[in-house]
Image (cartoon, rainbow, N blue to C red; front, top):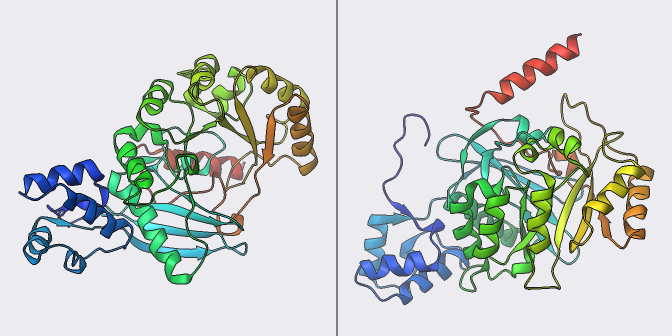
Length: 371
């Protein structure tokens, strides 16, 4: 909540999936189908005022107004890139801000959603991680990003949201309990009705929770790999020290065991002279042997004080050719929204950092700059 302001005692129905709504209405002495009606009104009609839900009785609307609300973040700022990418900084009740990005393409519109305020993982090449960490987002705060974007885009007649990627600020699997209900709302035909193949959860590899994710939902999976061996990945993705590559690859191999048509996307940021050599490409081929995977090479997006540089286009193309020659389906991600710092790894928001990581990082970086 904002300093000096008490948190609202009302239930925020924005974060309630269908089973939760049905249970609530039964508890109010209503029929369960009222949950479906309200879910549609909130997410398909975009209503945030219960009095506008005229398919409900006046008495029920008045009751809902007393005990519940549709509470969404406010917009701190909005930027649009030259390529059409849009970025919103959304201010939460407690004063923290998160970033949400919409990427329009010819046949689809992809919304990149945050799951945490900041990120606890501190990956070495990621600007978001350098901002430190404040807290997990609630289910309502996760889904509010989709609710908000759908409303905004419908008003401007732009490409609608067809895909959602949990690739914004934070590690989604470290917010599992709030993530799953949000995914359920995205997939529900009475809400957004997105295909399970068009909703993707990206993780750095929280192995035990990956097994839980597989049982809880059928959405697509992307793994932030970024290195072909443990020594390098320990540096780039510190979580690897806890869940090394052998453990991560084991769960990836079995992840879509019941659907042979689906594969895990391996995200691999291209860092000049760090992870982009032909030998490292061959190591990656060996690492992914026997795993139904596709590789997405991501040109590094620089941020202030970083020591890393983007691999050259020729180097990235060479790396791709080596992987493809082995039979690995490999794409190169087009950089979008870089002129408004909306590209992969650049989302920073405004984080009340309880880890003091941002303070230490800036102090160290400025000290190096002076020397």
